[in-house]
Each structure stands twice: as C-alpha cells, then as structure tokens.
Amino acid sequence: MKVYHASLKEAQADAGVLAVQGASPFERLDWLGLLSEMCLTPAKPRVSVATDGAGVAVLPWMEAHGGAEALANWYNFFVCPLGDATLLSEITRSLPASRASFAPMPEADAKALSAALRSAGWVVISEACDTNHILPVKDRSFAEYWSARPGALRETVRRKKRKGEVGLHIVTEFSPVDWDAYEAVYKLSWKPGEGSPDFLRRWAEMDGAAGRLRLGIAEIGGQPVAAQFWTVEGGTAFIHKLAHDERFRKQSPGTLLSAAMFEHVIDRDGVSLVDFGTGDDPYKRDWMEDVRTRWRVRAWRKSAVRHWPAMIRAVGRHKLQPLVSPNRDG
Image 1 (cartoon, one colour):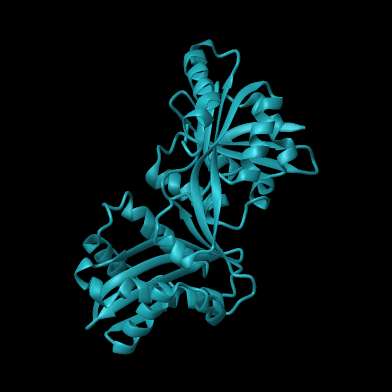
Image 2 (cartoon, rainbow, N blue to C red; image 1 turned 60 degrees about the vertical axis):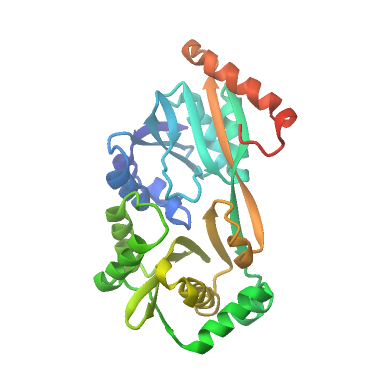
C-alpha cells in the first residue's frame, strides 16, 4: 500500500491518478487545476492518493481554515473522491489535517467518505446541504420530453416562436465573438456580478477545444438578449449559466433558448441526463423531473483538542436537528 499527499500539480503527473478521473468537469484534474489557478489560492490545493497496486483512490482537497476542505467553489455542482472507495480509509488515516469539510457531495460518495473517516477514528457528521435538479432522459426524443412539460411553458414557447422575433443559434466551438455576446447579456441580466469571468472564459475555451461546449445565444434584431453556457460530457448535459436581458422579458428569449438547448442535447448529443446543478429555484421544476440531495461531510480528529468546542457544538446541533426542523441544514 502506498499513500502520499501532494500538490495538485504533482498529482497531475501521476498516470494512475489521471486514469481514475470521472466524466464531469468537477472530476477532472485539468478543470480543478484551472479553478485553483484562477479562483483559489494556488498553493493551497492538494491531492491525497492511495494505491495498492490494483486500485487507486484520490481525494482532492485544499488547505483552508486550519483544515482540509473541498477543492471547490460556487462553480462546482458537486465534489467527490475518485477511484476505488475501499482505499479511502488509507487516505483519511494519514490526512495531514485535524478537521475536514466536504460539500456538496452525492449521497453515495458522502457515505463512502464518512465511512472511511470513521474507520480512521474521526468524529463524523453527514448532513443534507443542497438539492440538485436533474432530468433523466430515459431514451425519449425531445418531442416526447416536451409533451410532458407544463402546458403554460409549452404554450409560451409556441406563441413566442410563432411571432418569429427571436433568433437562436447554438455553437459547439469557442468563438470570441459569441463569448463576448454571452458576457454582454450577462452584464445586462438580473444576475449578480460574475465571480470570475476570466475563469469562465478559459473554461469555455478548454471545453470548446475538447468538443464539450454548448453555448446558446438568442438575438432580437441582431442584438444578443439571452445566453446560456452548457457543457456535455459522459452522457450528461451540465447547465452552468443562464442569463437574459430584462428589457426583452416579454419576448421570452431565455425560455425559447432553453427549449432549443434541451432539444440539441437530447436529439443531437443523445445525452441520458441533464443536470441543472445545485439550488432549488422554482423555475427548474418546469424543465426537470427529479431531485437529488447533496450532502456535507464534516469531521474532526478526536486528538485535536483545539477543535473540541466546535466539534461538540456541531454534534449537539446535528443530534437536535430533527427536533428543530426536518429540513434544516445544520
């Protein structure tokens, strides 16, 4: 058994680590590297690796607040260990930290990490922290999917499409002109300021070169009025960014563009899943059909006396949580 804890750059040179990357941006070391370079403190990202010759387990994390935290920010739909989960306990046993926090995690990954931490002697809390709206396509065509949408949504698209005011186009290669149009729409939208526009542009360039980019632009009279940034990978379409110019809300360019994007990824790309990321925004329910819970795993080493007050408070709140509110994120 070999276990080591390295910088992200060092891990990217390990062929065994690269071999267990997953089929989403958030499970690729090149994406994590770009995120670290442009959005995080570059010296803080770490990768812990365990290998027994047959399998490899990889845990990306970063040094933060005196402990180990998920290598992530608001751009991540989820975080998770990579590779063979049965080797995770070897990593958690020697993890160079006395407290840990990982979120948002898929349920199976949260369970695996929690079990590994407990087996290594950590005190662990696993709790629901967010929701993830998804659409399992189930081999349907877009027409079959669309026929099951709410009547008001279908009628809006039918009426606005018939008027012919909104022009739509979807590109799969990065173009500075198209990206400038996306950024122009975003600045005019109701959205808060973009956290890292340079990172987003570099990401779009990277995924455009790899054939994963799906960028949609809606125009009225030649002016961009709505834009959407999606990617397609591993049979899943990920919806990252939506924006529209509020001045053209009556023409519903964002709704028309969404319908076109869904049609593209379902009928042309043949995806099996559409992932709308985290957040329980009501409008997502019109487009999606299922919801998954995302989880937070928090842990403390019993020997870390300085963390005992925080640990005791957190464990106490967690145990009382059902008595306060069944949906509260403790």
